Length: 312
Image (tube, rainbow, N blue to C red):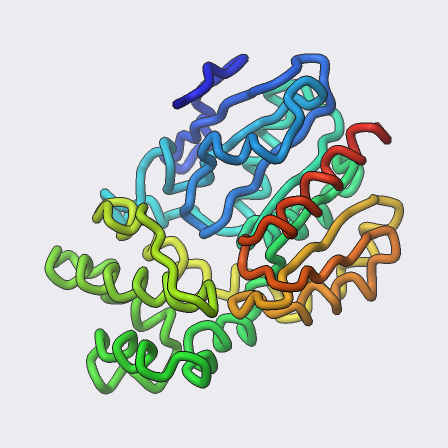
């Protein structure tokens, strides 16, 4: 059941894109912004569970091409035009200015942690705290791990995954190869590629089988797969060590980097290496937790969000 927001609207960011945003909680509370995963997952109201809404003023934003933003990547490949990490960072600044926020807490998970780090490094003066979990930085090395090297854990499922591609395209950049099929104008081609991509997403996010019911919606699945492969095939338009090298820009900003010890999609060494260059952050590697899953991981995130409200 949806909760009526304090405010909501459409943000015209140019390039033909209009973004859906909502504001929830206490209008006098600590400002916070949510950076959803994917790219392409959308910012459902489920993200509000991390916050005490009597203490926080939470802004939800559907990033370009997904959720209730338009154009939607599940309806048209035009949604991929002017859709890069740098565009998304600029969109956050437009939203911050629109809502009259000076500094906010930034909460992000999975892809949202990549975007959160990039945004905070570009605009450290606008970030009061960072809470990032299921941490990834979307480097080419990480993309290669998820799309190819993880065959070592799930060999049968991986064979099915790459089997959706023409044989000559199975030895190169798998994200790029899938992306070419996902933007093919033939619905039979792009929907088959979306099903194969999302089946692999279901497999690699956990050591135990899971199923995200959102993938049962062909429009969601296609939009999600198009956006993920669009970003992954370009390594998020970031240099291979850009985020790691930029951690010194976060000096003085408190934060949390939390990840599951069983997170096979975003291995814990990613968060560990970032924390080594960010002394103001707390690193928590949670036993028995996977990618964005587990009560213990959720408790760690909620505690940090609550603590940063008290310190505001």
